[in-house]
Image (cartoon, rainbow over all chains, first blue to last red; front, side):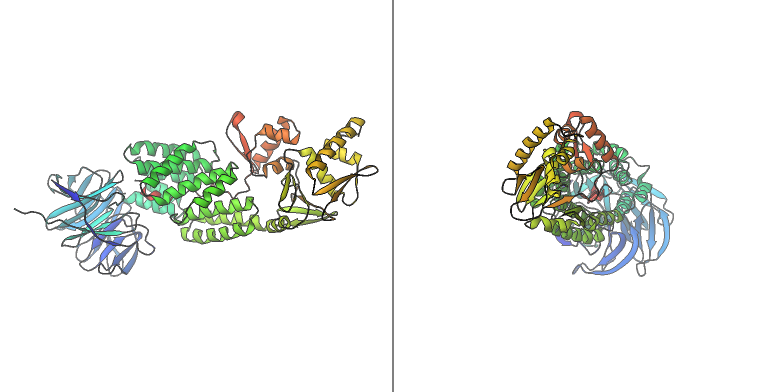
Length: 214
Length: 406
């Protein structure tokens, strides 16, 4: 396992009338954040909010290429990003103990905060396909380049880690500075991981380290 | 932080404690316990609230220092709301230090404002004023900011600084609007009504008039000689002769003031000050002694001259003397008047000051307490009584950033 300090490249927010960031997603152009009562999209180039949909949003957010998925209380809503309409609803696997949300390989991946797990679920039914054990409270979850990353936040300490999707073994760990939590996470598909900062209302861009391959 | 905790916290912030409870009622993890505790406090069940917060703090474990500190602050807030003023202040101070060390400025400032609020309630007004002057309210979130402004207003009301009180209440109104908590708005309205309600009755040459607080303030700033039955003192300008602990002297001063410019017969003074039905020789001797004492205390403010059948008060600068009384004088008014100095009194000190038996004073205190005009803290010999002229905000329980209890 490699371990290093997280490198914060940029900070966004806090955003107008959004005290918190509960979840983060990226649709290829804009970063989406869940603020509790809305989902907002901001432009990562300048941080300006381009869109805001009034929807309950208490934890993770994900994007499948066409739709947003948003955890609200103990359910996951499938949302049309154009008009904010809820198209479908499935139960969240931890019944409200859910945190992060990611889309990959036709599945949704849901962080089970206090259970220290990541569930892979069927996005049509909510059925749990398998569960990956983690060693700390799980917050944000994201897939990039076949790597599974998740955030942790426990006892006022936060970090970001890459784990083995089969065993849950920690492969890389990036420690967040004291006082900066990670409440949601999404990769931009490249070298950046966008991390929600909980009740700081901020989003932080973190550099994803290049893995030594082979 | 998980989804339902976040949803419950959001409901609590929006003034919906039942909505918060619905979401976490069946959960026993530490953040859920803490939120349930705060929700129960908002619903007025302080006993259950305290137990839940204690349980939350215990189960957070030793490494979650911030979460435990926030629980301690919430517990202190509940104790204040329940008027349990004897609770250990050390744990609140320790929690505040922890929050400061970890950079949680909002909650640290909030903890400090609770410490100051307690000082106001137990009558440590000078300490409270110093504390307020040193506290930077800028990190406070809207709800906590509103409570801070209510404390400023309450202290200013006690000090009869109506302008300061009014502007603090205006700032409170603005931040309460941001906080969107109906209870806070109601509390501001309650505090504001103290500014327009009749605060005292002015008696001048037999004529009576009701005064508002700012009228009283203006009267105190004037150069008039005032016999203040609200706070048991004689005052003119900056010179104040406190008589709260000399009730007989105050009774004489008031009766004499009401008799200006004519004198007051001995018999009337004796009946009024000593509650003596008939003025015998011993009463006359005692009256001479007491008048002598009063004369000394009022030296420079007024003379007390002997008349053919009694005594007459002759103000030095003015020809008149104003008597300031409570709008409605109930039979426990003297107890209230003692407490109106803002200090914390023991019942034995009150009995001494009023020349009444402990039993009488205790009965008066019990009556006043049942109509919420006075409140007590401590038990047994350490029990102290205060008169909360300060705005009440028992229902304003809200820990800023309590959503990060995890």
